[in-house]
Amino acid sequence: MTAARRAVCAGAAFGLLAPMLWSTPATAQDAQTMPIDTLIERAPKVSPDALFVLAARLFAAGRRDEAVGWFYIAQIRMRFRLAVALDLPPDGEPALYGALFETIGPQINLWAFGDIDRVATHMQEALDWDNSHANAFTPKSGHAAELEQVRSGLAAFRANVLTRKEEMRRERAAKDLENR
Image (cartoon, rainbow, N blue to C red; front, side):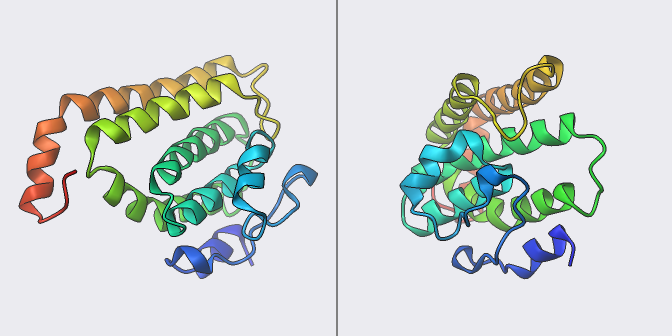
């Protein structure tokens, strides 16, 4: 079964994520059963898929603000991994990350964008965390341009969100979505 198929078979409910594919000894322990705080402690050493699982578990545990931050850290690490490892088979990690993003992202973002200032803060905190922590899964050394491209993409998105804050609040209200 391909990595993407494993992720899709996981189901949309966060608590039902099936066993993930682990690529290095640093991520061999199952991120679904590892205590959440242990997973947070090991975050600089794990794969992006483990970070998506962390975000999902935090969200399901009611630790929603933390989930948003880790979701954006997972995206930074995923996008950097894909920018650096261009020879990955498309039905492997790229498909897995895409499936996880599409499975976990909508529910987290639906809640997160109820408070534009807070989601923008989480985006900045994700950028700050990534900047101050090593990436054992995809080392940063030798890939400054790729890392800068990924980080500047999130920074630009954050700036756009803040610029469109009132418009986004009106759009949510028109759809009967909560604004906090």
